[in-house]
View 1 (tube, rainbow, N blue to C red):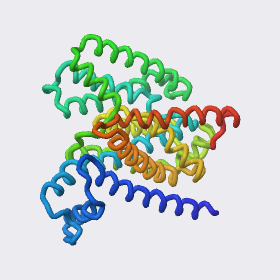
View 2 (view 1 turned 90 degrees about the vertical axis):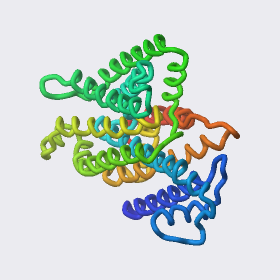
View 3 (view 1 turned 60 degrees about the horizontal axis):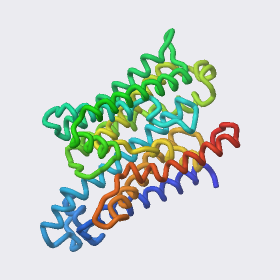
View 4 (view 1 turned 120 degrees about the vertical axis):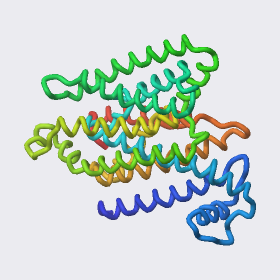
Length: 346
């Protein structure tokens, strides 16, 4: 199968899986809603009236006020995390890189914990999300600034600086857990586990704008990532300004990941698993890889959210727990595979 046929087949399969997942996610829950009514309610919202639309207002309100915002958030968060992972792997030149390496996740957790413990704006969702986003982006910029020397940044230095700053942020989080009261500790722990519960349209709008901007910039840089894969010196000879590309890419990763975790909490391994799987199918060309990662991340998190709400009757599992249960063994497999291939790309 040619590369173009492979991309078309994968894109179609992911699109079908995403549509099916969106309908399924909106249909299942404590109030079971037929798939036809889900589609009918969506079409009615778009101004198309069909016989499939729900007959009662309770179902319609449940879909538009609770289910649809949550589904939209799962799609956006999954896409944002997967594209951030693809960009990280491109600039690090390593298929095992993921957004947490540069401190965005630990910084977001520290910011959210600070908001919760201090009771900023009465502990509102907006204050927690705002400080989480600011913490993620701020810590990422700090890592980059500390790793920069003589006008450039070495990948190894950036990685080691990220590890050090992650450890420091972890210590700050532990301190906040120590000084906070029981209610604050419970809220911090729950936030770290990740959840899409309580998503609202205004939050979806914020994440949608940031995700769209981040994905658009990543796609615009895709050709330069292809050149960077040839090596920094070769890319520089071909006209790529490597240092500028790296800082813009890190900012893109910070915005995408910060937007995702600000409202959904820490959701691990999506940025590692999805881009690597897409690369195994499509190869290393980054334009197709970024688009496929966005679709794949949306599919993965949509179905993970369905599983989180249905695996245990009457309870909801943290979605970050489920992605870790899947991603942990997959990461171990990647390490074994990379070792057998001397660390090469898939």
